[in-house]
Length: 347
Image (cartoon, rainbow, N blue to C red; front, side, top):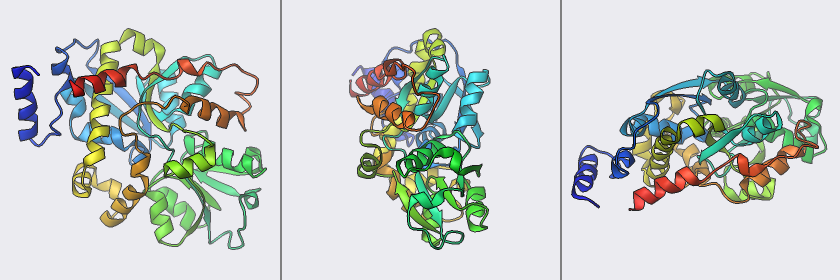
C-alpha cells in the first residue's frame, strides 16, 4: 500500500469509519461518468435492503464521489417500473425481476448481490384462520404482500403452487412493508401475510401468525427452493452499465463496503446507524429480527453460480410469461464489479 493510501485509511478509522480504504482513492480516483445516481427501492426499511441503507447512512456512496437519490416505493414491482420508465437509474430489488424483464425483451443485469436468501416468510393469521392445517387451506383467501408482482407475491405464488394452489385462486393484497402490513393482519383484512423482517418477527412475537414457510436462513431456503436462491440485489439496465462502467463500479464499491461492515457490526452500531423509524418502536425486537436474518445477508456481494438457475426454475413453476421462453441467465448477472471491489480491498 502506498504511503498516501495508508494515511487515507488511517484517517478513515480515526473518523469512526470501517477502516476500509476509499476504493476510488485506491484505484487512482477513476473519473465517474456521472456523480448523481437515482436508486429505486421497494420497502427500504426491510432487512432485505439493509445494505443499501448502510451504504447511504455511513456515507460509503459519498466516499465514492456519488450523490445518491433514493426513492422508496411500497414494493419491488413499483421500484422496477421506475427504472423501466426512466425515473430511476438503478434498482435495489429482487434478482428475479431481471429474468422477468428479459422475457419482455428488456436487458437488465444484477451487479451486487445483497441477499443470498430471500428472508421472506409466509404467515397465516390465527384470527381469521384458526383451523389452518396446510397451505392448501389458503385457496380463496386474501394474502397480504408488499405489492402485487413483488418478490413477496412471487414467493407466495411458488409456495402455493407446490401445494397445488394456483395464484389466481387467491387474492393478493398490497399492504406495504411496515406498520400498515401489521395493521392489515391484526385487523383481519387479510388471512395470511407474505412479508419480511422486522414485520414478521413483530407479528410472530405477538402470537398473531403461524409460520407456514420461512426463507430467512440458508438451510430453510434450500428446503423451499432446492438450491441457492439470490434475493435482494443492485440491478440496472445493460445500457446504463455500458455507458457508465466507472459509476457502476463506484456503486459496487460502496455496497461491498456496506456488506463487509454488516458482517462485524455490533447490535448497537446497527441501531445507531439505521433511522429510528426502522425499529417499529422496539429496539429489542429489531435486534431479534436481525438475528433471524443475518445469515441471509450476502457476506461479499458475489452471486452463487447456480443462483440464477434456481430463480428461473422457481418462476417457471407458476409464471406463464416465462413458460416456453428461452432465458439466457448469463446476461442477467455479473460478478465482475464485485470482484474488482474485493480485489481492491484486499490489495
